[in-house]
Image 1 (cartoon, rainbow, N blue to C red):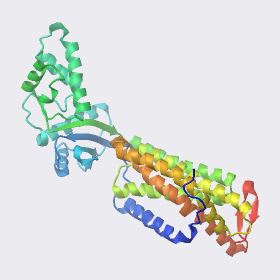
Image 2 (image 1 turned 135 degrees about the vertical axis):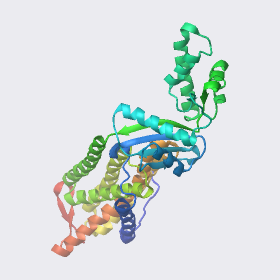
Image 3 (image 1 turned 120 degrees about the vertical axis):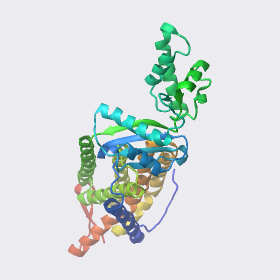
Image 4 (image 1 turned 60 degrees about the horizontal axis):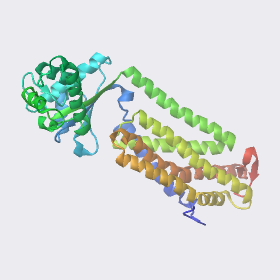
Length: 401
């Protein structure tokens, strides 16, 4: 199946437009990484505490920051999760301690501080349904024993506490608007007891994640080295499979893709997590594969079209592979775009990297790698008077420049 037949687009004739596009986005990304948002490492890399808080109603970020400040945490970063109508934010706190005890302590401090600002109708000694754990709920019910179970109370109330927590987290995204939301979920005496000794605050802490600074630095170094090793390995492979200039051109194109993708994260102030690094490594392979397809067609045409200039051969090769490029890249793009739109917040960073990377990776195979190969041959022509086009398996074929 082909979308395009006998196309004759002068891609190399538009190389200065391509160069301008690449320079604009590359420089913008670099400036953002150096002076504006810098590289927005996630908690996996920089270390710290990340708290996922869901609110019943929309809350101003400044109020959330004030509440966190009251808990003794300064320099907190507030990030609203999409869509904004969900009223869910990620509160990123600087690293302090890394033990399990500090994790529970930090969560308790944040909940206590939030309750001062968004506590709802709580009172002394009442339990907060939106932030109580299943064990806290079961202990409360066991103490009240609204069902008068006697000796069988512990097992039954443990099950009821878990049932309430699951309903809250799965059906109401972590926050109940009132105790009446539990109607039909648990028996009426349990609801009556909860109305007496429990309340629903205006927020719920859905999760707390903590990473120490040493682990964060180690992950950062591993991510950097993984990217460099992958580029070096592909350079060696292409130098062996084609010739070194092919490898250099392909690696420069992939580095260009990585720079623009990371720059896009910096410009949009999106956090780079472990899943984003996985997406970037995936894109390195994807972009390299697309570039190899174009290079392989160039190498084949060099043997067949000895009387044509290298620029003409490269243009023809890109046009011949254009249908394949549009089909494969287009279908992959639609898939990752669906992930970005419908995959939820967990996959948002991963899918965003893939969306940007596939567009830029496909573009660079045509607009960066191929023109760089021609530019090198033109430089060789000026220097030696002969343009040497790399041939198959180390053979060199001389053609007119």
